[in-house]
Image (cartoon, rainbow, N blue to C red; front, top):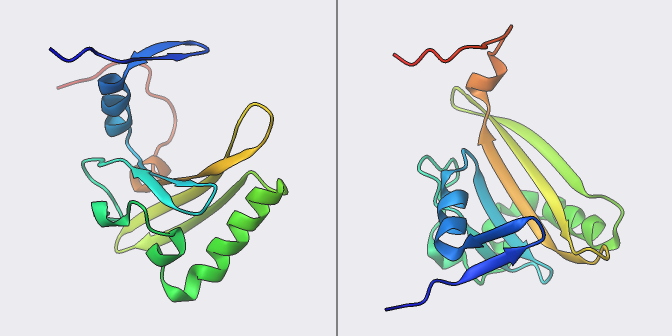
Length: 139
């Protein structure tokens, strides 16, 4: 029987299968690009906005974007690597949906650049929220 590997973090521990399940349950698309601009990971969120194939793993991130936006991708990565910025955000209309795309510099405790996390989310319903909802109203 395979031994379950526990990952120890500063604020607790999780099994590898728990980390995978946690990442898959988030209502966002995640993609991690390492410090060498290589795509290393993406989650398989049920309703991924931008579909990914496992073929992107190991590719340069520049090969995963339209030619017309590569200069923007490179600028974001350069500024993250230099430590000049820690995030970049965009939003686009995709059919009837509003898509929020954020990039975050991932750094170690000493501030060294480890890579970039892309987080994409359909915020169409979120934009419509007003007032408060303080009770559970499952029906």
